[in-house]
Image (cartoon, rainbow, N blue to C red):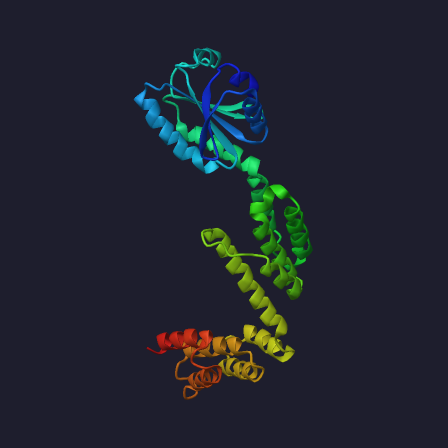
Length: 312
């Protein structure tokens, strides 16, 4: 259909990759027809004498510029192409047709809702880029974030990584795959996946997911590496959360095994519960850890700040 459209008029301009040119040769027409098989075509019909059209052209360009990697804008001056005006039955201008795979997907005409037309472009863009499929996979991955579903989580992530249309989702798939390995205690495999992932400075949603899964990895790995005696004591503390002696005993055990993060957390909790407990034993133990780790240690700096807030 697109070939039929462009044959209706001998001369028009189109924008591709930010470069304007005139298409007058058959090879160029065939190129555009071929583009419509994989790219959206924004067929923008306007009148050069119309100030309203000039303003609309800028508005349209502002909207569709973000789809430049999957779409092509073709501008048609209907004053020079009366035949296309009749063929498309254009009653008013501006007029824009969204064309994909030789079919009209949607049409915008004067006084219609432009937002609805842009929404059609956005939906089609997501389909072309595989985002609809990618989003569905992400939703399903979120539903498999438990140990009993770890194998399915790994398998589903791997299937997403095999789909070339979903490249923009690859790092998310790797994160979920790493989480599956963490759930199974396969920390080396998780670490290998983390090394393949780059933090995306402008993608807050991705960075939040990255932080959540890496913190989950650290928590599970720390638990996995704890001596059995400490695990048993922590399980007992869950049953007796008000037992401050047990809490302090676990912190001492953690210090002896150089599990300083756990010891600091337990001791800060003690201060939070009773700052004067047993002659401030918790504060004294914290100061001992701080001296051993050194004043420049990041955990020491954070913990000193937390302790100061609790005391003052």
